[in-house]
Structure formats: structure tokens, C-alpha cells
Image 1: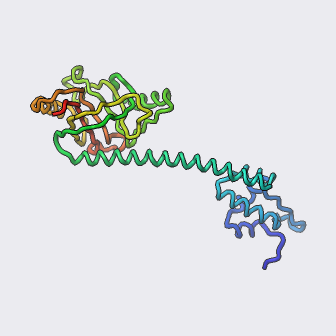
Image 2: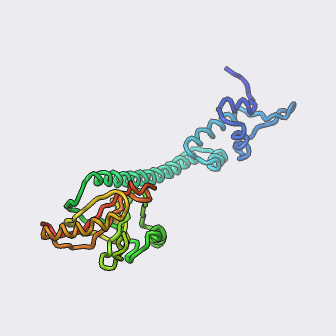
Image 3: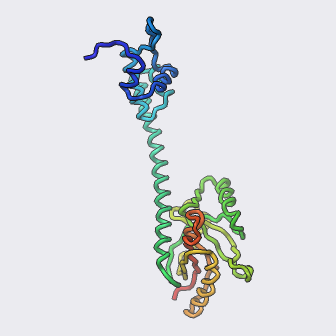
Length: 274
């Protein structure tokens, strides 16, 4: 058994496998208080400092700050130890809640992208039934594409209780066929809204439950203008009443990829049931 009563800074560094600067920092914070060797003025750390070092390393591993550790050392008793640990547990529980919320957000985004990749496999016009879908309307007027991000930030600033994600969420547009420029490759839009699972409680807009004609395509948005007339013609041939303006659901776009060929868009029109 080593019977030494004092240790040099290098010995502490080796013992705890930490840098000299860390030990000097603990000293600067007032937790360690070495004495000086009268012969060479080297720092000498006592067995009491060894105990403090052990406490420092243990509490740092529990995410305590050096200020908390210093306060603990200055007021070390059972009651203080109990409340220090209890307070830190509360902080950790709050962190866990935030992590769970972040995890759920990531899972929702991944789910949206997986859903888009499955839709991508379906070809041509199809009929789908949807329940009510909860959305956030960020603009109820035509909005140029370049201003969408600005509108998102402005909306969330005015509605801090709402959370609009761009990556893995679906930005959607109601199309204004009547007022669109026939020479343009794109339709004019009536509004811009966001759809994502889990928006109930934050929503300000609801898409009604019902039957929808749908088409999913990849690539340029120009394909919407090619598909909408075909969808309207399909509804007419099958004696379906058109109940809504066409809508673009942009499941994958510039937020997820810089490659336009990877864009995935779903066009939907609500119709009467057959």
C-alpha cells in the first residue's frame, strides 16, 4: 500500500487519466487547494484533494457543473447531497422529455419519407379514402415559392405553440386552375399549408374526410399540369362529382434533396364516392 500523503500534479493526471489543465482548472475554481513544496514550489496535493478529485470526476460524469460541485464542496452535508441529486434528477427528466419529443419528430419525418417512397411505386390515377387530416395553413393567398420559407418563419414567430418542420414534412398547395396562366408550366396557388402526422392540437386547418383521386409522380412540378386534366377527365368519365380544387402534396422536394429527379409529389382531388 502506498503510504504517500502528497502527490504532484503529474501523478494526479496519470491517476485520473486527465490533462494537467483540467486539474489547474479545478484549482482555479477553488475546489482543489494544493500546498507548495517548500524546496521547489511544486504543487502538492493531499489525500483530501484525492477525495475531492474523486468527487469532482463522479459529479462531472453525472453532468453537474463545476459551479454546482464547488457549492457542494463548500456546503457538504447529507441534506445538501440529497437535494443536489434530487435537483439534477429533475433536470435529467426534463432532458428525457425533450429527447423523446425529438425522437418522435425524427420518427414522424422518416415515416413521411417512407410513405412517399411507397406512393412512388404506384402508377397512374388511383382512388383513396382519407380520414380528416390536420394541417397548418401558413398562407391563405397565392404565395411565390421563394417566399414560402419566409412565411413559415413569420407564422411560427406569431404562433410559438406551433411547430412546422420542413425536412420530412409535406408542404401542400391548393391549385387555382381558373386564374392560372395557360402559358405557364405551373398552376397558380390559392394557399400554402403543411401536413404532417401529429399536428392535431396545433392545426388551424382540416382537410375533410372523403374519397380522393390521387396521382403520384417523381421529378419536376411541371407534371402536375399534365396530370390534373387527366384526373378531371377520369372523374367525369366515372360520374364522380369534383368536390375540391386539386392539391399538391410535396412529400419530397428541395428540403430533402437537391436532385429534382428525386422529388415526389402527390396530386389529390376530392370527389364524390362511386
